[in-house]
Length: 129
Image 1: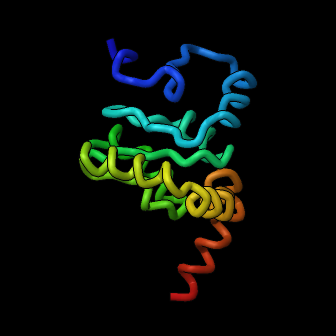
Image 2: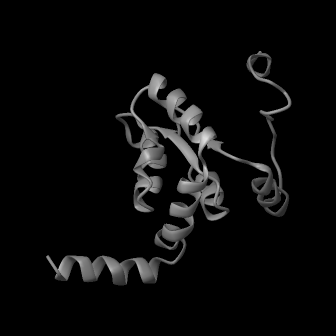
């Protein structure tokens, strides 16, 4: 039923894949849509590490805030929506100008993928307050 709402040329629903197969799919994606009410964790990190923006809907419970936490860590707050309407708006806006956010992800992804570097930068920020 859910598939019937989407253009099959643009949106694909994919079942379980091994990691290598899954990682290769990110090269074909423009935007990843975070799941709700339980946000992705591994998939979100994978998408971001492959420089694919992930739009997430932030809720009020811990399991609805994981995606927001991850994209906040890499300073991409513009990928976080607070309502269904804003979620859709963000996806549509992002689809017209994706280069800027991809550059930002590429610049900041080390904050998720290189924790030692992140901690050093974080310590520097704390000591310079």
